[in-house]
Amino acid sequence: MLLFIRSTVNGSYWGIMNQLEYYLECVDCGIKYQSIEVLYICKKCEGLLDIKYDYEKIAEKISVKTWQNRPFTLWRYREIFPVEDYSNIITLNEGGTSLQKCERLEKILNLGNICVKNEGENPTGSFKDRGMTVGITKAIELGFHTVACASTGNTSASLAAYAARAGLRSIVLIPSGKIALGKLTQAIIHGAHIVQIKGNFDEALRAVFQLTQSNPNIYLLNSVNPYRIEGQKSIAYEIYTQLGNAPDNILLPVGNAGNISAIWKGFVELQKLDLITNLPHMIGIQAENAAPIVTAFKKRRENIRPTLHPETIATAIRIGSPISWKKALNAVYDSKGFMEKVTDDEIISAQQLLARQEGIFVEPASAASIAGLKKIVDMNLIEKDDKTVCIVTGHGLKDPDIVIKTSNLNLIEIDPLQDSIANALEQKTIAMERSL
Ligand code: F0G
View 1 (cartoon, rainbow, N blue to C red):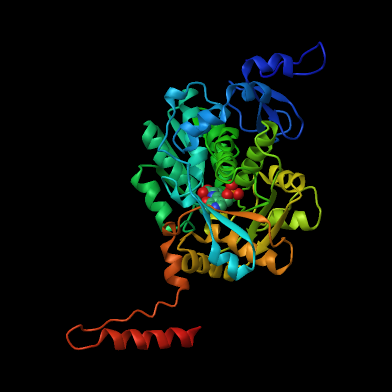
View 2 (cartoon, rainbow, N blue to C red; view 1 turned 180 degrees about the horizontal axis):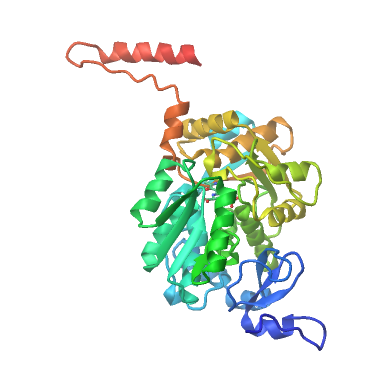
């Protein structure tokens, strides 16, 4: 099968490629591949692939009015996703998550405009469902019966659910003993074949890559798969719909670095489609001991140096060798954003802050975006009246153990026939105040 066709007329691929509507391009060497090929990385230089479109053609097809008349889910924006036949999509009604204005947080941080995009509202409780609806739809289109991923938990939960919905077999590789209970439970109940890896996520990712290379009948659905990223760019489209434009800043946790790349791609597309007038600064937050992209950014290095033994309480982003680091750094540099790291203690207090002040319960990795916001406010890196959107990526119930471990439980038990509830509550309040 011919993978790419070089135009001998003007040295450009576009004239021949544009009849396909979209094609794959290596972000490193620029080689182009036809979209019908199953490819995860560039055959020549092993660079990541990106999906390219003819935006003029897309602009002719889309209408904001049509979008407004459709239900507020990811597939409202169906014209910007590379699927052949919309009637065959695999969906659980993902997307359409709320953008909550956080007035109490604004007061505490002395900022004028903070919103939280609550990705925990997705069907399996994380943003991964956005990538998975497109990825699994693609798997069906390409004729696969088995899909696989390596995961710190959320991807495996989402893959298992969408594979079940599509009637596909799913295989998930997880770092042994290092994924949150809720996520493991989801993979089990949706019938995934679970393989625990003695090692961390980076080793699990290498193993699943080898598995799919030596078994080409298994479709790899980690974020190295360019179709996953396409689904996740919907976050940008929704924020644009909810705000009427792009915000000044987007903050989000960064692990394998697919999501920051995807959301940036979405905003760049919105600008190309003339739907927004400004682009946001992309601000990526990593956990202190799993922060190779932060280090590369701060040292102005062109490459990351992997963290060999990543460690953090936020297991979802316990990643030392993020596969999409290059796309992430490009997003940060191109958007005039930055990368920052936060400690586990900062993550836990941000999780509690969001839960207690705004009623939004997120898992530790998601709280990294709030911890990061607090930190950059303290560093005076943000304007008071900036419009800032923090993406909180996964629901708090994914990881109940962490709450039990990190909270001062101080549970009270009384005999309602003998003891006074009011007295017991008073004692508890005094004890709580003392512990603060
Ligand atoms: N937040 C949560 C809740 C996640 O589960 C992840 C990644 C991230 C943030 C980071 O996103 O990798 O695109 O930079 N979880 C992956 C997984 C690695 O396997 O579930 P990223």
